[in-house]
Amino acid sequence: MFKSFIALFRGTTHEAAQSVVDQNAMIILRQQIRDCAEAISKARKSIAIAISQNEQEAAQYEKIEERIADLEKRTVSALEQGKDELAKEAAETIAILEAEREASLEAQSTFKTEIDRLNKIVRTSEARLRDLQRGQRIADATDKTQRLRQTSQGSHLSALQDAENTLERLRSRQKQMDATANAMEEMVFNSDPSTISEKLAAAGCGAPLKSSADAVLERLSKQTKKNKSKD
Image 1 (tube, rainbow, N blue to C red):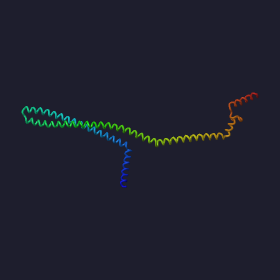
Image 2 (image 1 turned 60 degrees about the vertical axis):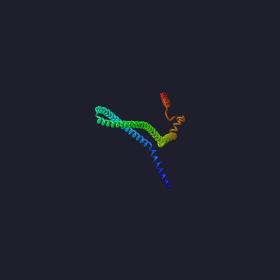
Image 3 (image 1 turned 45 degrees about the vertical axis):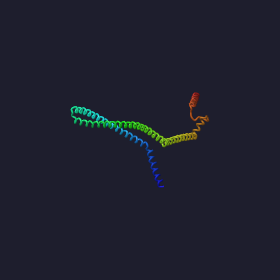
Image 4 (image 1 turned 90 degrees about the vertical axis):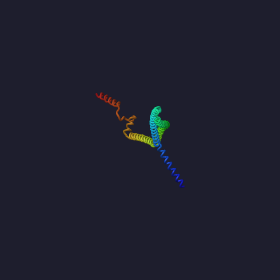
């Protein structure tokens, strides 16, 4: 049982850690890419140092060559003059310089091999870094799109739906209020006695309640004729 609890604890811890990693994958990826870029930058500096050291070694090699050539001429001259002891001493120096020359050649070969190896590593690493950076940009854009989609499907879409429902209710209430107002006006109009009289007069039932132009002309014409008859 105790072992089961230990396994449960380890499993829970692992899953919790994995969940944290998954939730922060973009942050982790960006930092890892920065670490890669820094490592490549250090590798470039190593190459520059190796090239500089190789150039120094090549310059040293040239000096050794010049010294050997000069000593060989002087040794030959000493032999020609019968100065064998001096010639032997010079020959020993030449042997030492030749060993240094061989060591210099070996060092230059080592530097060249290392420089070529580092250059290949850097070129390969730079290509992989560019792929990672492109992938990171795509992953970042995808992550933002997915977050936007989740947000749109959640609170934003809900808010839009709520706003549309509110607008619909407002329009419905306004229509109802307009219909109620119109009905009230109609009821007031129909219940007014003067309104009913106007309707009856307009329908020809009884004398008109309002004077019309024709009625005024007719009345004035009758008045004129009446006055003439009195004269």
